[in-house]
Image (cartoon, rainbow, N blue to C red; front, side, top):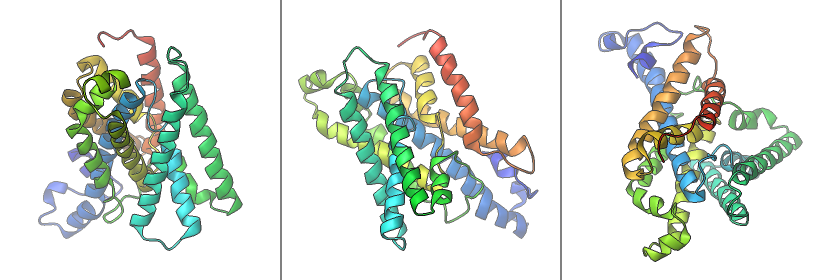
Length: 303
């Protein structure tokens, strides 16, 4: 995090911010908000990935591959067209509700699939996300809003994050914390509805809580910095292979690992063409794809 505070087009010394007004201004208005946004995004998306995989009992899905993020963009586009002057909280509410509806639709669809066809689950997710994304682009094209939705649908980046433009990500962080308090319930639900009912768990209530967590995390990230790929897919798989399926123990590690991964990619994007930047979403698209293919190829040591 200290490296993130020090790297940028403007050369400052964060340790001298107390006696240098210019360094203090850059630090408080740009560097610190950006660093916090990166950390919150990585932690929230990785926790959302864990919850998503527990809800559908499949490790090959994530919020960015089942239509959740595209549904959040559809909600934002809808409220932009209907009430362009709506308050920020109204837009966030619309994005969260749309993301929850899109995720619920995915869960409803995969429950009709044959239980042994586990590879159909990510395929259905990719098809659904493609359909919803195409719908968003089509509607945006009709109203000349393609440039606006491209900030939500395509690779996310943090260069525009300043004080006052990232604070909604704290809601995603709070949702991730809520997931930790309910970790045991999600772990039981991942064993199946019948097992959960046998243990006295209200499966539908836990399912709705999980959808809420995934929707809040995805909607806040999409509306603030755009779509960040692969974090919710690869980080939970790596941690699960190292620590097993104890969600209460592994969720903090998942959150820290997701934050570290996004922070590393954002730093690399800032340094590789300094003082210009490559979006963190582009870096994660390459790194995440390579890591995911490696995970598919290597046999897990446990779990």
